[in-house]
Amino acid sequence: MNAANNKNRPLQMINQTDVRPLTGYFTHDRIAVPNPLPEAPERPERLDVIERNMLALGMDALVRVHYAKPAPIESVILAHDLEYVRRLEAASAGDPAALATFDAPDTRVGPDTFDAAMKSAGAVVEAVDELYAGRIKNAFCGVRPPGHHAARAEARGFCYLNNVAIGAYWAMRRHGARRVAIVDFDAHHGDGTEEIVANHPDIRFMSLFQWPLYPHRMMEPTPKNVVVSPVAAGADGAVFTDILENVWLPQLEAFRPDIIFVSAGFDAHVEEQMAQLKVKELDYARITRRLLDAADVLCEGRLVSVLEGGYAVRSLARSVMAHLNMLVMRGRTAR
Image 1 (cartoon, rainbow, N blue to C red):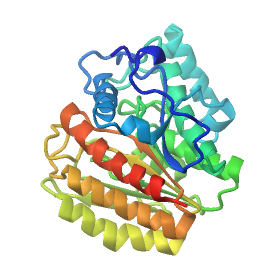
Image 2: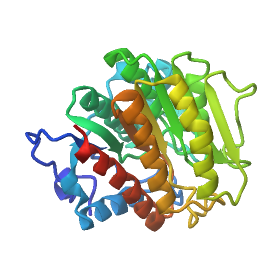
Image 3: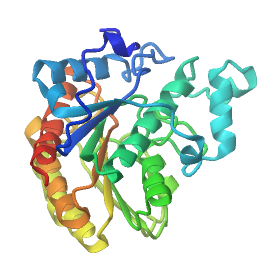
C-alpha cells in the first residue's frame, strides 16, 4: 500500500451525512514518509499494518476517516516556542544551520519531517474540533511521527511536535475546556508532555511507564499537576490495571476533566523489544474500556486517543485493534 497518496490507501471516508455518533479515525497523507534514520524502529510499516488490519476486520466501515491538514500555527505555538517551530521548518527545507541543531540520532530531520509533524498535530486538532462539533463521540489519531517526547523547544525520541499537548491546549483555547486530562500508557515516560504542561492548574497529566528506561528522566520535584507511575521491568497487565483503578481513575474523578486525551503507546506489549513489560491486547482493551467509562461519567464521553509508540508491527496492529474496537463500540452505542 502506498500510504503517501490517499487514493491508494484502503481506508475511505464513509458517508459523512450519517448522523450516528461514531468514532473518528484521524490520519494524514504523509504517514508513509521514511524516517531520516533508516534503521529506526519508528517507520512507515507501523501505520501500514494498522490500516491493513482495520480493512481486514471491516473496522474502516465503523469509523469516520479524516485526512488531516497541517495544524494551524496558532495551535502549535500553544505548546511550542515559535522559534523552535520555525527552526524545524527550516531544517526540513534543508537549511544547514537549522539542520545542525537536529543532530541527535533519534531526531534527524528530512525533507518531509515538518509536513508530517504538522499534519500529525493537525489530526489531533481536527479530532478535537469534530468532537466539540458533536459529529463524533471519541477519536483515534493514527499518526506518525509520534509526539510525547517532544518538549517545548526540543525534538526527542522520534518526536518533533507534541500532539497531545497541542490538542489539550487547543481544546482549552478554542473550545473552552476548563480542565483537561492527559493519560499516557506508553512504555516510555512522556517527558515532553510533562515539561510542556508542568504546573498548569487546569491540566492533569498521568504517566505510566517502565523505569529505568528511555528517556531516563522525570522532573524533580514532580510538578503538582503530574502523577507519575513508574513500574519495574516485567510488569504485566495486572500491574497496569491496578494503577488504573487505584491511581488514575480516582485522580480523574477528583479532577473532573472536560475532555480526556490518551497518549496511546503500545510498546509495553510482551512481544516488544523496546521495553521489558508483559502487557497483552486484552489488557489494552480493558484499560480503554475503563477510560471510556470515566469519560462517560465525567465529560460526556469526550476522549481523544493519539498513537505514540509500538514498534513490533504485528503486536502493534493487534493492540491497536483491541483499543480501537473499544472506542468504536462505545461510539456506536452513544446517544
